[in-house]
Image 1 (cartoon, rainbow, N blue to C red):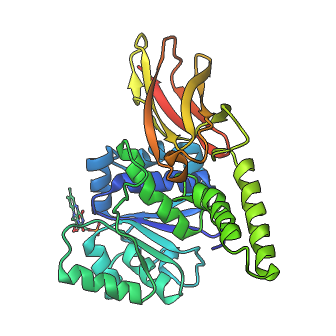
Image 2 (cartoon, protein in one colour):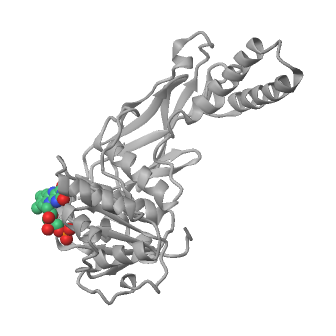
Length: 358
Ligand SMILES: Cc1cc2nc3c(=O)[nH]c(=O)nc-3n(C[C@H](O)[C@H](O)[C@H](O)COP(=O)(O)O)c2cc1C
């Protein structure tokens, strides 16, 4: 998908407004142009679930600067707006969350609103259409509509997060789903480490190749050479990858992946500010300390850990399990309003929170 064409984002009245807010934040952070359409019930759910009662409120939640440079809004009543026409090029469309009402309308091509029409256009133009429904249980009608849409080329992505990353807070569950949405929209994301990305490709792969070397010794040289090459490449990746177990290193200081930042939206001027950081540890990674650099208007937090050498016999290395550890960090006044909390994350984009002091 072209990064310069707008992604059409529809927000409808299914539960799951936090997914929509986080998705918009990530898209603007990636500098992707967005054509945004919010249905009447989409706005109602934004209010009920995220305390956002207007488009201006949504703009505040996303960040005015990023919003103004990336987001164009359209009325859901205006079926003459650009997303209603196939001649207006787009990079695809996502409806998040997608109510069963809107899903059924798209399944039959009803096109009674701009969201429905834009989705219809997306399908007919053979562009990517991602639908994020939230409903449970599902009736035969819901399932039939989803099947119809999947057969027409839509990606039906129910908002049902996994738990194998050991989520500690709601934002981890939200990020799980938003990461999958971004993957399907072709937008680079670093919200979630990919399952066994580290260990299967960098540890098990050379380990398997090594086993192959031992077992296949009597086989011809033609097999041995590729196996040796695979082993050498895998071993090189293993020892050179930050965040993975490194048999050559002992107690190396490493920057830990912080997956969540929890901060109040406002505090009293004399209050202590407590922020919560969800830090990924496990496998060979262990939390060490939080470093802070601050002024009256901003704090930069960096979470450091240790790459502890446990050896190949340790089950934690062969069957690594990552989990999130909550670390609270307290800051004393003075605070200038707004006070920015920023968490550095190495190769990942930093996490930020804005705290009003009033
Ligand atoms: C608080 C609340 C929660 C709702 N949750 C869901 C839901 O999870 N899934 C769903 O399909 N509809 C849900 N609905 C119903 C839709 O909002 C309703 O069918 C609406 O007409 C959808 O319109 P839209 O698709 O144009 O936004 C909910 C409604 C309310 C008020």
